Image 1 (cartoon, each protein chain N blue to C red):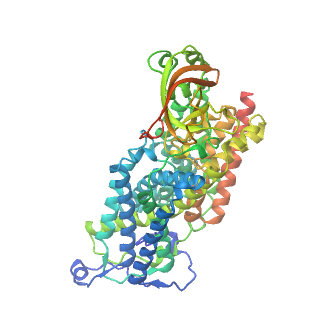
Image 2 (tube, rainbow over the protein chains, first blue to last red):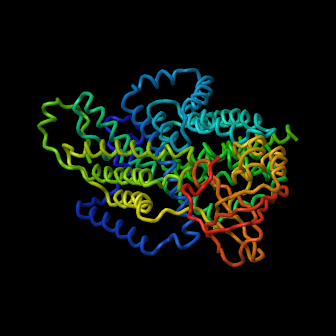
Image 3 (cartoon, each protein chain N blue to C red):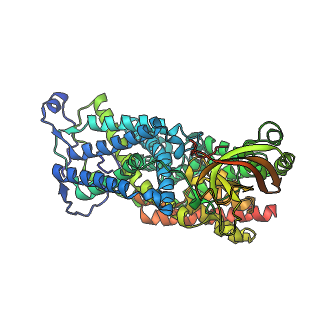
Length: 350
Length: 249
């Protein structure tokens, strides 16, 4: 929530020109009424019994499951993000920014290997890195590579494909393609400045931490403020994405794409579309990809590389974090590079 | 809202009167609600309705982290300057609160017949090797996972005629004969969003006794026929839904 108390945050959101808008404030009494309405609504839902309606039951199960699985990772990402903001001096990022451009993107991509969380956790970290002074290209490269190449994801890919002839093609292909696509997209967005990259959060600028007593206590108060703000902000977008993914999983049977498995380019696009719609966690998507045995190595790699970088759930998170143009650019760039690379693999493997 | 960013001496800051901040309390309440939900799911034994045994550690970790975050937010809820909460933020917070409350108030559910056919039914990532399939008791997970490799299918074929006993839920279509049904379980590796269906055709079942979604225990003789597996039932009895309701490779 943007009840974000930003103390001395050098976030471009704060410095970006803001359109004055009258914001209607609420009172303690109104808050209590809203809370009462929420509780009443939930009680009504209990009496109505949504679990007795099959499609609603299915959707609720998947939605709740996605939220329960992803929220702790969002919190972990917010924790790292808050720690970077409060405890890491800006000079550290300035030094990284002085690295030769040719080294920044590969370094950021490889750094993703050291961040073992899924895609939901890497978004707040990338935002914070960019706002602290890391180049846009490096921050985005890190954000895109971490969910594909981190050790947990590599291990789960290995487990999903073990016993198959294609084991190493899938494991190494995923790592190589993940790094490649992340660096290419990082290069594409590297021309963007921070103000063009990050979506302003007006509330962030409005509500600042007011107590600036110097010392450790103040640091921890700021840390707590940033942690809560990032978590609640990302959480709302995760909720929207999880809801959309649950609806799609409920109403669109996965068998609908089976008919295109043998069509050269269409099969790649179909698996990318499926990854987008399913919005699976990158730590488990290999098990689902491996279940589509009718699709070849290239199509399954397209699923495994595209999904952790662009999906419904992430689309909502990106929309809340970055400017609209960025979301369009990153979607097209990830899609184009993944498609071209997997087409080469399809040709190479026959 | 004007923003004071000039640091003040500690004594002066301490002397400043403090006010309860509505935005911070609201954020603390939402965090605390989600923390409570995670504790509820963990301590209530509901973890496996949402996550697999591989990833269930996320729930206690989430409970602890969210509790710490909520305490941190509420502990800093008194501020020297009055802070207000916009109506928009209040509504967003209220909506974000809903899923946590729904999980706590609705009875736990697992994927059912509605999801069968909407999800893939080829199980990947099952750890059973051909050696595991060839010896010892044959689990439903091994039966499902045998389809992944040629060796697995061969090893499964060699078990034809063995007696097995599995628990699952019933599905049937309009064309299913009265004395047959499909016995189903879902296999999850992370959460229910990645569920894959495992099913076995049961023949010689009591006609008309079991309906869609009924949980049953089937004991009988197994006959793997390529990718189709049949159990000729000796006994089919009602069973309680197991916890966990899903299988995990």
